[in-house]
Length: 397
Ligand code: ADP
Image (cartoon, rainbow, N blue to C red; front, side, top):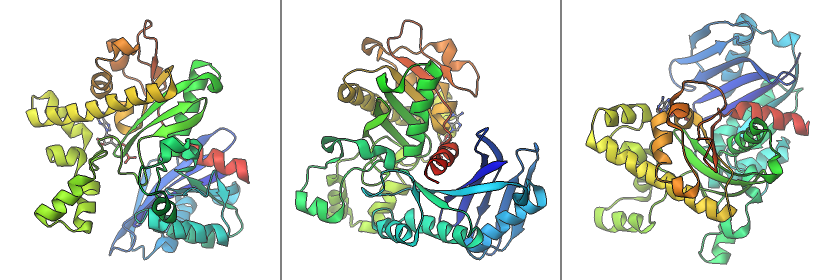
């Protein structure tokens, strides 16, 4: 059996999946968390054997110890790594700057470049580096591949990625739109073409990746031509705890009038805004339940959320010069019928018509939720970033 181990490393935890590259199925997966705390936890599921999730509590000093805990999970609960032809370890990396146009085999030079890009992604890249270093120590004889969230968006034309500020200053500090969720947007836009049985090259698609983090992407013939996240994953749609688009002058105002420091502003916009800021709760399920029960604050917050999505749909229809498909994906997009329906409400004049019954019919798979008369086909397609990372890792080894 030939497999790729996919690692998504954060600063105090990492998720992993072992994927059979021929059948493209998950063999095992897990989560190692609370790294560096007094008591950590390793969760492992032998998916191939239909096993239950196995939890082990132990002290996990650093990522290297975390990898050892993951390997122990495989040894104890299977599948046995010794019986598998592990051909690569694929690492998710959030920020690849303008350097990494695609998946890249990790060398010392590449690792140094990923480290350097930490200035543009201080919350993410240092954690990825820890994961990569631990991975290389534990799996020294296997190629390690970095798959970047940003690569898919490097096809954006200059007018889409350029901020209207001093050109020399922007160039000096790498300030431009990079966009994120690239593996998801790529996977979902390709899956949409496959699902519809139409050539990717002729499709104009808008992907709405609505999770805790959320972003929209305009995909023309398989290529990203615009996306809502920017220099960092803060720009664009309203998210669980992030504000998305905001007038930058709000920051000057809060600094001058309310004494907010740069760090406080950073925390405010990244951690205390979005649905959390508007309602006091950043979890969309709770906001949805409250709104359905008649809570006016939750309803008003969702109206902001919908208004922003609709704005991007209209914007991207114009940038694409037409539209064939809208795809909903990620936690909210895949699971919330109410949010899908309300977000696209009033767009019938643009040829977008959601079918109520299709939209609410329960399913976990890819499906059409628009009416037969709708000029634009609206789909729900579950994203699979881990599989995309495995595919891309395989392509470069
Ligand atoms: P991320 O990967 O960005 O952490 P996910 O794609 O897992 O996020 O999405 C998480 C979000 O999806 C949470 O806000 C959660 O409340 C929301 N979500 C999950 N199921 C539902 C549902 N049935 N209705 C509304 N929101 C949901």
